[in-house]
Length: 312
Image (cartoon, rainbow, N blue to C red):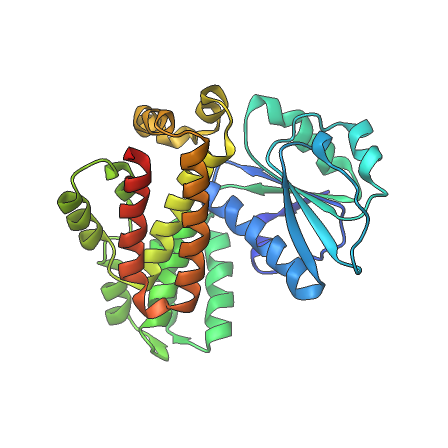
């Protein structure tokens, strides 16, 4: 059945009561957020672990271990049809798929939308009404006071891509205020919130230039989170793809101007470098969780270490 991304974001009329979760659309930051919510919701409600597989055909039912629930994250919907879904319905665990829209995914999306034990979740840029719903929930949770005029100004200024919206709301929270006024909203909105993903595309420049670009764009812990999210996405894409052809197809369409750089970057990686990159991602995430006060420095160190691995 179909369910809106906003229902998952706000956890309204959304329950973990399905076997299959198919996340699709063209707004990759929202798609990743929905995936994160699903994974975290499973972990909150019951003991569980995530197992990455390439396709549903790679699934192996090992049975439950001490009643541990397993979430199988499928990197591709290749091979998904009524028969393959029937073959895993009685297995232990749940299945999550994440794919950008393409002509090839239309049939799969329709299949999950029709299945009663499935959620098909479309993720597109948030419209004005959706942004208002997110803001309402944010105000409620944080007990903020806000005038009507300021409220609608903020709704209009919040951007449609989820990561930007989340970043601005986090900056408001970091201000430690109880009243959202026009003055503090202006402070937040005058900060350059855009193009943090572009930092990654300067990866092969001289260290001095990289440091300058990073310090110009990354000012708060929320900036680090946004920057790291994009960098992790690009790194994970390199790690997960086994061929240049596969990698080329998975580069988001909106990055057409950076495609040549990304492909050239992929060509510099072999299995040894991919392993080092995966270890760096794991180590960085642990450090960011434990030492949030040092995240600005750790974000820069992470970027320089990615460069070191790339050119080694």
